Image (cartoon, rainbow, N blue to C red; front, side):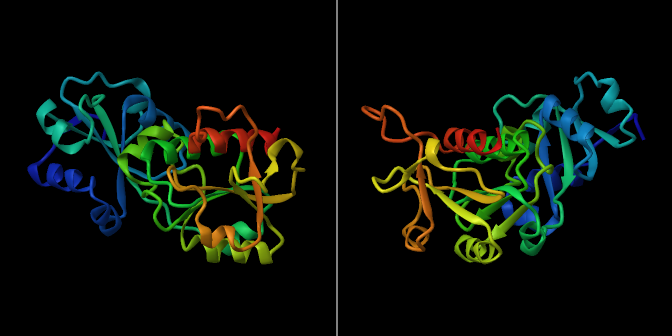
Length: 257
C-alpha cells in the first residue's frame, strides 16, 4: 500500500494520544518524527513500523514510497496536533515499542553498557542513545526517574538510532548489583575528589558506565555501594560540570577506542 490515504479522525486522535506516556504503554506504540529519523529507521530495520503519516504537501522519497507501508495523509493543522514540535518536518512513523529484554540476556554479553540515573532531559537521553549506538555499546539501563526512551523528543534526538540498542527499564541499584555479581565492573561518573581520573582507568572486558542526573549527579544510594567513581579531568574553573550526554560520549570514547 504505497498510495496516500486520507487519515480518519479516529486515527488522528489515536496518534495524538501517543504524546502521552500512558497511551504509549497501553498501545505499545510510539512516534518517530522527521524525514531523516524516519528514513534511518526504515533503513536499519531494527523496529516494526506500523504506518507512516505525512503532511498532504510532503514530497515522498523513493525509500518511503518503496517501504510497502500504509501512508496516511493529514493537513498541516492536523499534523501540528499530532506532533509536539512547533515546525513539524512533514512526516512521522508510527512504530511498535520493542519487547523489553531481560537483564540476564545483557549480563551474558561483554563490552560496555550505559546506565542512566534519573536522566530527565529528553535531548540528553536521545543523544546518549545515539552515541552509545555509534560506539557499539551492548545496551542501556534506564533507571527509575529517567525520561521515557520512547518519548517523542528522545526519539527525535536519536536521529534514527532508536531501537538499535536494547533498553531495560527498572530499579537501577538492583540492576547494577545483579551485573556486579555477574562480573561486570560498575563505573559511576562523578567529579568527587576521591574519583579516579578517566585517563588512568584501565579498560574492562565488561563495564557499566553510569551517568547521573543533570542537576544532582549520581544519587547517594549508588555512591554508597562502593563502586568505582570516575571523573573526567578538565579546567573546571567557571564550569560546574559537563553536560550528561557529553560526559557519556567522552567515557565511551575512552573505553571503546
